Length: 159
Image 1 (cartoon, rainbow, N blue to C red):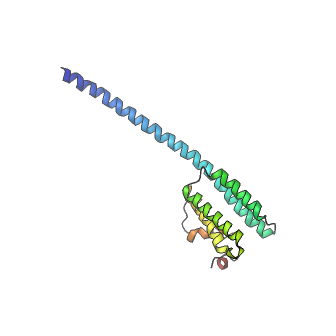
Image 2 (tube, rainbow, N blue to C red):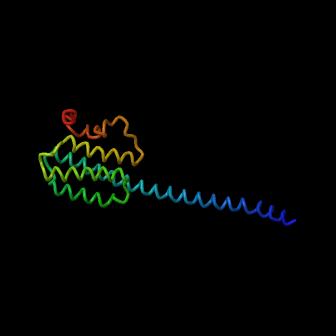
Image 3 (cartoon, rainbow, N blue to C red):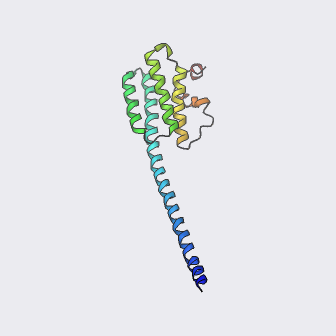
């Protein structure tokens, strides 16, 4: 008789426990999905700000209205402060590599190399695109074709 009671209780309790665990797992997955959705939304906005900044720099350079290097660095620092909490490690590392390049080339102008400069910027944008789940296929090595529309004699610079 007691064996039958245990069997009945197990028959009732096991599905309830399984349902509770399933509900908890689903709740955690949904919560994580919502958080990732919000992070992705913020990333898109921040990454777009970066792209706008870089394209504006190219525009200013072409029209002869060059920003001072210090102002550019201040703007990049402001951007860095905003995105540091949301960007993927790959984007953060690419941005850090770019800053290291800027530090070296500012201290030693002979190290300035347009090809390295563009490649560093392209690596940041490729990492951003990858972070957002976008394809980078057919954008060239390190995504150098991202700037092709903005640079006259692009092929000459990238050789």
